[in-house]
Image 1 (tube, helix red, strand yellow):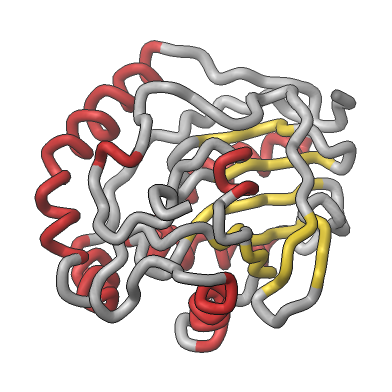
Image 2 (cartoon, one colour):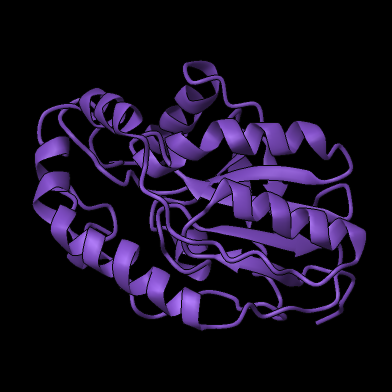
Length: 238
């Protein structure tokens, strides 16, 4: 558990080369979780034809950058459910350190709603990150799950524009063509997010920046460019 809730970020905490978690066409794992206000809820208990599930934390610049686009998607598709799975702090620092207990994690999730204005349902993973690791363990992955609990779209890194295009295709019953290329966070959001986390957060991030650029902006995007997008029927059963 101590290794999962790391005190200092390093690119070595993540496997950027291996796709983990449920693939397109597989059953999405279900978990009983607490919401940011303490209510128990099953992850796959949702209204609508699809659930758009994004993983994130308040110290993740990528997640914070995607939030406006994901909020707009949530507003534009009222018949689709949206939720955030709150995971470990991506870039802990002196002011927002790694979670020490579940109450600390719930408090950070509550800050996401009350301080940052997050309007989507926020589900809080357990301290050991059971749901996070079942969904691949990346800091800002996104999944679209249909009403039968099957994964019909996924990306290890959320690209809000690509997620919108994928959802539009699913709602219309069309094949997904969008490729979810990795896009860096906005520099202004990164500065704000890492500064808010406190001393140590920005330094740890900058140390790993060359490795992150190589693994994600170059290698991952090249693999995606040369590969094919897996597609399944929007209402498939698995």
